[in-house]
Image 1 (tube, rainbow, N blue to C red):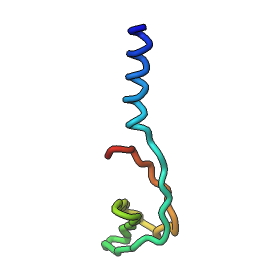
Image 2 (spheres, rainbow, N blue to C red; image 1 turned 120 degrees about the vertical axis):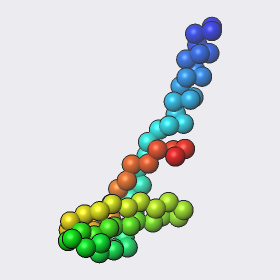
Image 3 (spheres, rainbow, N blue to C red; image 1 turned 30 degrees about the vertical axis):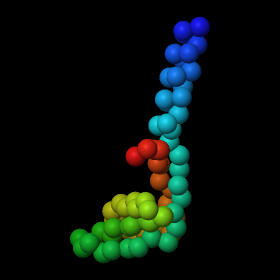
Length: 68
């Protein structure tokens, strides 16, 4: 019985750190020189960015970990 309770508790804790994906469109683009562009995607209160040597993609999918 103790083993079942322990396994149940561990499963509940592990689900809190599950990853999900979010896809965001229409980024803001900032030319940062040296042929590089910073792509800034905003959705609600979350902001994701990355630097590329080309143009920003219209939409991008980011991995999100709940609780971070």
